[in-house]
Length: 445
Picture 1: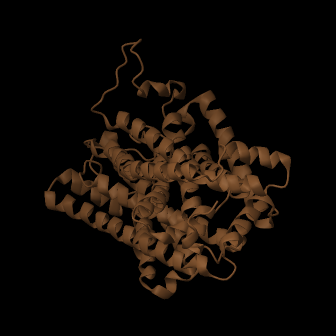
Picture 2: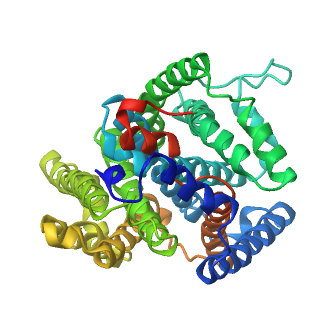
Picture 3: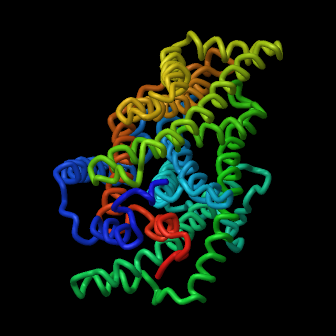
């Protein structure tokens, strides 16, 4: 295992990880990434200001394509966070020790991705200052939530998932924050990390409460993984539109969430281990296991593509058949075949153990999967909306610069939060790694 390698002894783990947060100089790749993140985030802020001033008309949406980039971005981002919770919580409940090198940055990925995703439904409302209408507040204006609508439950699912993800991430950080507090060289950092550590002293009662709360939050997080994206899927499958009205959507969306989430975990983890010299902690074995999980989730998604096409023709419904025909060879046919290339063809390379241990190749495949999964959401949303039952309901969607601004800007915002995280907080879990280094000494102090 990783922690038994030379130089990864009990005290060396704390020293190595603490150094990254307390003393590691800003490298050139970090600065370049930060500049890109700030520029894209600035573009996003400008887009939000223009949106609030002029409304959603700045986007390319119109009738019949009333949902487009914003909802595509929302579904894509919220899916990316799913795998982080699975890596951290589900593997914790099943006592998989190899998660210890991945869980911290995977949890951060979840929190940041869900935070970004939650912005898009609010901005898409047209009047985002009224977003609280989705909540069951005291009735003052005869506005009652429609409890049979998946959109209402979607609001609760996202909010609950975000809160549980933040709590689970923060609780896991507390012992490591205490380590940074004790190792900090300046008074300012001692106070900063001391406040975040909540008075942690490593007493037996602290560890007992830490383990109990971690177990409870992990148990809450795992079912929320499935409920959140199932609710997102029901937003579509409850509609009577061909291409949406399908009972396979909830498991299909959950599988797609894991698929894109594992891809993002690889895309973030591979540069992280290279730029910060973490090859002893995030090893080729970890990349191999993540690649296997991405392959398994990808095969499930590919099966969903096949079932979707088969059921349309098997049902004999001419509207469903017309929808599939338009998806394969219509105006957006290129999107479908790009999805096939990215999500079906590229992952077949991962059957090879040699390929799975080649970081550059796995990184490229992860990027292709992320592109393919965004295009898949675009295909499902726009590809089903642009042609209705009547010729008068047909209309193309053309993105504007502000559609691109919100997509690229959301990536910059996510990257900005992740870069600040790896600079100021422990990117690896010292507690988990120390357990592997010296099992006879327990979690340490």
